[in-house]
Length: 555
Image 1 (cartoon, rainbow, N blue to C red):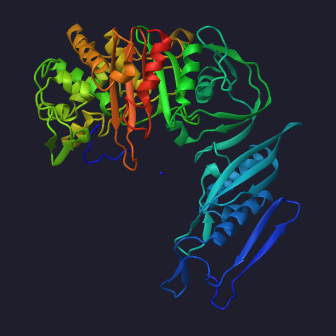
Image 2: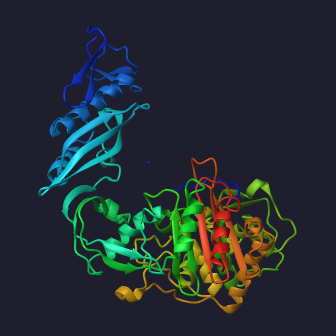
Image 3: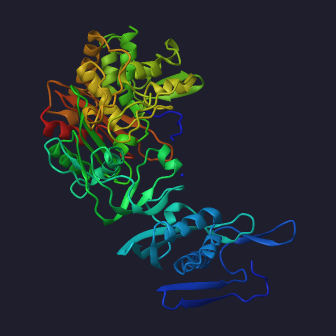
């Protein structure tokens, strides 16, 4: 989208001591420690406190980082939990998790080997033995820590977060070894083939979610595992427990999904070509989810992301404008270069303008101010109601079979309300949400997406309060087809017509040089939506991914 005022998205020694460095090898531990005695030669400054005690300030020196990191790792390795915790800036939290590392996770024989520091960040490798009721297995992984200076006295300490202990932990999470509370599952695609994270790397978090929801219902028996048990903050973020090591296999139950093996494989291949890419594929006539893939596999952006959708939100905005009879596709509607609203001046991309054109032309060109200039004619809650009542968004009631975020379109006022009309402000979506938006246009009604049939567990799917009229649907298809034929989506959608439609989007994010690129489109009875974060314009980034899947799926 165009330039505008940005909306935030959205992580001493006494002077007489002679400086020297003494290297100390901790025998038998495989860990080299360094003790630093510094009379002020290290980087950093000192300041006097009220009691005339000098407090070191300023950047940490390499020696300070090395000393603090080594002290923590050495104490942890030797089981000196209290000392290790005291070497951090949150001793209670560190002490609890490090104690649980041995008592609850049953990890012993820990060897920690530091790597080369980058600034204040120190990577290290972990080797340990997982031993539980006579069964043992080696464990190895990498982690890192960051050293910070305590404000009160300038002392270098480890900046404590649970991820120091294991990179899969978030603050509040714990590690536990024992009989898993949830039996394993064998997840199947729509054709009966097994879905595994080894074959489809994007499905790791999806399989975790399926197990958590259906493990007990599917008839399996629990095994013994080392797993991440999520705390309150992670649960709120809808993260599932995660298995790290399996000591003994349970008996899996079977859960069938709606995923297409061919489209899932192609989605994995497509997102693998770009960084920070996510895509979701749906069947509009049923709501079945056919594929979900993400470049990064630790968090499912496709289902759980919360990002400004940029101009793809103009589909919902246009629905509202058509229903209110404020505009029609072929009505004359210029798009000014700038538009002032509540003290803000909004700009179009590249300072463009459409002096003489129709609303359809502005939609196809994704010209922002052709939408924002409707703000004075709208109530603050109009867009929120449209998203909820017609598109089923933002009510936190989707039940797709695994954790998901259902979008958010908060009631806003003034310039923020204007920004929401073009998918900025407080509006948040993910590829699942925007695929559902395009699916609602294609089929004429909202069908909640799902990956596990509701017949499996008799859950109730979300519904929308009302259905758009046939006239409104026809108008939306007209402007989306124009965009696919002649607008910002034309290059990506070339050769896919005639029964198709698309919308591109770019969403500015503070701190990013390039916007997030969005693209949502339908072809026949197939819909796909994707985002490439910090990738640039949607037609150039997410567009080729979406178009490829529509082409492979055959519509």
